[in-house]
Structure formats: C-alpha cells, structure tokens
Length: 396
Figure 1 (cartoon, rainbow, N blue to C red):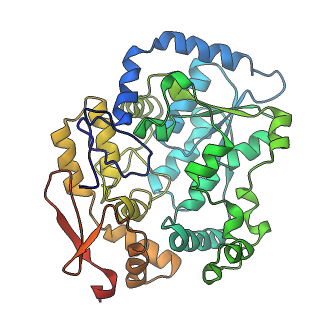
Figure 2 (cartoon, rainbow, N blue to C red):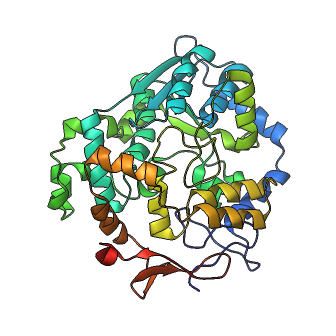
C-alpha cells in the first residue's frame, strides 16, 4: 500500500498538509499537537502581551486582523479587543460565495466588537473567471480565495502603516505538524507563495501569464488591472513599514471547538444551519459555500481524503472522538460527491458535469488511485479497497 495512515488519528501519508511519520506510525501532526501539553501557556500569554504592547499606537490602529467572520475570526478579535485592549483594523477578502449565516456573522463583527472593518470584494465576473481558471489549471476553483486571504490584509497593513498582523492558528502546523510550537513561526511571503498558493501567483491568471505557462486555452481576458487586489506588496514596501504577521495559536492553547462555544455564547455567532454533504462539522468554512463541498471533493479526487478526515483528526487529538469514530466519519463523508453544491457551482461558472468530471480525473494522484475494470479504485483506512466511480471517458 503506497498510502499509510497515522496510528493515532486518521491522516494519510499523501496529503495536502506536509507531514511525516515516526517509527510507531504516528504522524507529525499528532506529535506536534502533543507539544501543547508541555507548554507554559501563562508564559506564552505574557509574551503576547509584551509583543503587542510594543506595537500600540497613539495615532493609528494597533493591529490588523484578517477576518472571514468565522469562529476563529471572532475569537482572534475577542482576544485582541477584550483581553489585550487593542484597537484593531479588521480586514476581509470576500470571495462572493458566503453562506447566509457566514454573511450574517461577518457583517456583525463591526457592531459586536466596535471595530473599523475593511471588506474587499472583487468583481463577480473576475471571480467567476478565476474559478474556472483555477479549476482547470490546478484543480482548485478556490485558489482566488487563498490568494485574497493572504494578500489583501498585507496590502492594507502597508497602506495604513500598521506593522503587526494577527493571524489565528497556522493551518499546516495545526494539521500536519509542519513546524514546532517552539519555532514561534511567523507569516512569510515564502509560505504564501509556496504553500498557500502552491507556487502560482496572480500574474499566472492573466492572459499573458497563462501564455507563458503554455496554457493559452485557459485565457479569460484577465489583465494586471483586473487583479490589483491579488498583488502582494514589494519587499521594500513591507520593510518600510516593518510588517510582520504572528499566529495567535503560538501564544494560546488553540482549540476551535471551545472557541466556537465562547463566540456563540458571548456574541451570538451562528454555525451552519444546514448540514454539509461532505463533513459532520457545522462550525467551519462558512465564508465559502464550496469550501466544504466541491472544493473539498477535489481534495478527495487528488489525495483520496477530505474535510471529514481533517475535522476528525482535530477532534481525535482534542479527545472529543476516538480513532474508530473518526474512521466512521471518513467512511461516511470523504467520498461523497456533493450534489447540491456541485449543481450550484456548475451553474455559477457555466460548465457541464461531464466536463467537470473529465477535468477532475486529470488531477488524480497515481500514488493513491488506480483503474480496475474501468473504475477508479483506492485503498482505505479501514483496510478494504473500494471503487469510487467510472473513469470519465466511460461515465457517459
């Protein structure tokens, strides 16, 4: 079997979040999570207070907080405003596909925290074109979202001359153990480009950029002026302000389930009101209705696992679920093709399902997938291989 699974959680060795396994088959995500038990969190809190005190300003915002309106955004802002006494500037990249409850949560932040809030909403036509290009180029219709989230707040920090940016947890460290908590890792342009954006940048989506990539067939007429919101500031601009991005998860024992309880009780934050088709959690990814849907289905196509695996790993590590229960969540949700979500997105971008399936198949990882009797087959965490649909040229 080319794919192995962590013996503590349900994470696979071939994954979107880089990880390793020790001699006992335990993944680096689980090992790094266990570091939390050894950390003096009171000391870390003092470090955070000392650090943020250095950036307090009499004449400007103290800090920029990138927010989506999700549970983590509320928790970050709660800590900054209520616990640290900071005056933040909230910054949002809006990708146009919020769930109604996500939209509700987002627009209430200005009121419940009494904060100034900048929301950047690119042209809908541009976003639809970005959806199509991202899907065809790299199997990710939400690439524009990753770009916007990790670009717009830095643009705002530069323009408003606010040096400190407060992110939530480091996603790759939280899931895969990419770094140690002792590294106190900070946000970098390198992480944005090489990991969050997987080596592509805004210019690759212009007609000129696609031509250089040898993909003129994907051109949608996008120009430099269409993607101003996606252009990362220069090193000179960042250095002139001294912009740095810190992760709250390095200073506070991060547990999203507990954070969601706090923001629901104190601020009336709303979880999803309708169950997702591909995961059991109702508190995650409300800022894009396709994040838990076909975007995640593409992760299953590429890597053989999905959001339910991610969520189960988090809940197993938090002691809220056994590994056996996690495996059942994987079995129930990871392979589901989200009908409701897919129909909406296909209409949004003007694509047929047969074209969607054909493009999907181009991104299947051969270390995960094989063809048997005209069907896509992969090995599973519960031990028995399963077939997951016809190959696209036989699907019609």
